[in-house]
Image 1 (cartoon, rainbow, N blue to C red):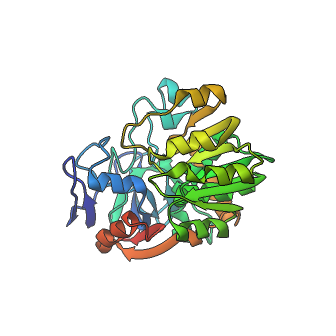
Image 2: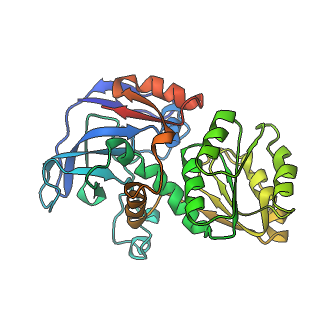
Image 3: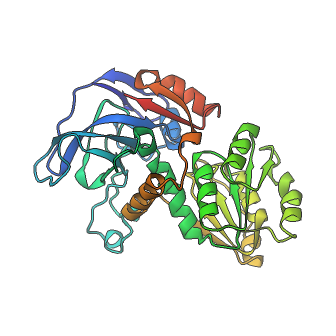
Length: 341
């Protein structure tokens, strides 16, 4: 089968023919139907992501159909259509027993620590498969993972009626966070980014105001945001850029007593001004992956037509053209590239 393989640390990966896997006990073999390229995948391909167990087939935003079941698998008959959540956990450590499987003390994330979906076939635990409702498209199913990451962050930040919400970064996570904040009754939504076409997409998906900034001086938009918010700033800030330069802006934009949710993975060390946190009594919340129930809830939001996925899918390519998809994502010409193995 055709698969993308990351073999060594640093830059580099290979698109090659490998043996089709067989499911172990508790696993199913899926024919991958659609898979999205995530920002985390870009970091794997260019060597910034180091938390990997190599060699590995990357890719975690995928959906497919069951073609074979391993021993001990109940349900999920051949032909069952499923989406896959990436959070493999041990199920018995302290964090797992608390219901925080995403913080498992022995994590095994699909596409990072075990083989993922940049392949024609993938073996995954049956417990990571979420059956799809009739009529849900493969493209929508492959969009559940990034929506779930945004949902977990918005929930942690406690977005509610009356809140002004500032979203830094109109990429897939930021654009889903924009839609979710609107569903939660946010009073006003500001989206901040460096590219005009992405900000226009944010307006299309519910942003009240969009602020274009230059990475060299992100805080230049602060006067406009303060003017638009009666001098207070935003009660909730969702930082979805992964750019350390955006952290100063997040602190500046947040209102006194505000909450900042960090949903990105940062590959550079950075500093923040602690007095901004102290004097404004800010709460900074990390949001890493998601729980099983979060994935189920995101699936239902899409199935019920409450969240739009199709405006984010800008490019569709065969797996054999993954290099082209990576380039489109790196250049920000694409919002989301979906591959069909």
